[in-house]
Image (cartoon, rainbow, N blue to C red; front, side, top):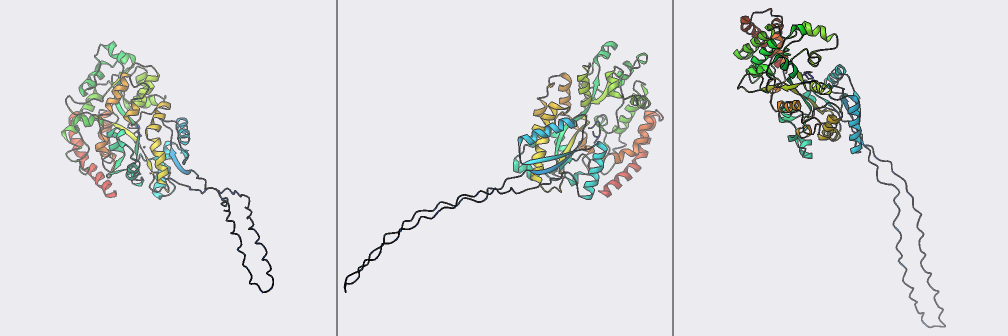
Length: 476
């Protein structure tokens, strides 16, 4: 997943050991039978008289006590499943272990063995295990689109439990949890890009604050008016890549609605306009260059640190950066990424798909843990004890700082349409197409291309992009 899209901005195996309980031997005393009365002796008759039969008394039918059982009922053992995860800015190892302790305390039927992996280690191990169809965790993240076919469909488990999926933000559930008309996981957490601005800098420059419907023209204006070279301050930064919120706000799309043709889309008038706007932004000299960021990053800083240090008046950041700003008591507010007046607004949003490996031996046990971890209980725990913004609206509203203006603005952005509706709608990544226009992106960043040549550059990229796309579909 996209790191700012939590590319991170990221199905699982349940090994269920049903172990019969050990019988407890319990031996009672052996009951002693009650002896029957001895019949009386038969009298001897005198001489030839006929013998008289004597009727014996009826036997005493004393009931015997029921035998004491020799074994006790089997003791039920918990099912053990495996869970792979990692530490992030949103949930660290400490908070996840504490959440797991809470899960174990809440029930005794499922035991979870957790393994923490680094980001690169998680990707490598998960890819290897799913490729071999062996050794994958019962529960884990399926944030790589190539892993999704190995996830267990949850529709039957959800129906059996009557688990309410409507509690999740619909745009996040539909773009992350659904695949081929199946539900293949649950969305953990939410993230989105937005523009953070520093009101103190706006006040100093006597520039009005942006409203929620920030426009692309306004950003160009801020880059010019809020840049102060004497203070080593820039008015704006640059978008991280094309065909995200700003491109979608222009009406640009990387491919046809069926995901199989790029001509007329990658080079559409809307796409041309988006790239030309980027050229205009770079030409203001009011944004850090990539070289600036490369040098600064070596010192452990970047756009968020530049913003918190007062060296960026506006910056495209995310909810993790907002939390850093809140902790630092920094002056800021947030608005949508820029768009065009009167046009539909999109947001670059992301979540983490958590699911169950289809090779699991114990789907019921895995589901028990998954619905806790990614359900209201687990997400609230990670919200309260870590930095998670939950994908469940009712839980989000319980956030301790929910009344802060930036948080309220963030929650409204979560309701906007998600670019993943288009870029993640198919089993081929949008990067397949974007590779063909990477040179154009770099050339604009260095102003090594004229503004009027952008149309021709996009037209020239179409055959290469189409070839890449066709090859990707053929592999699928």
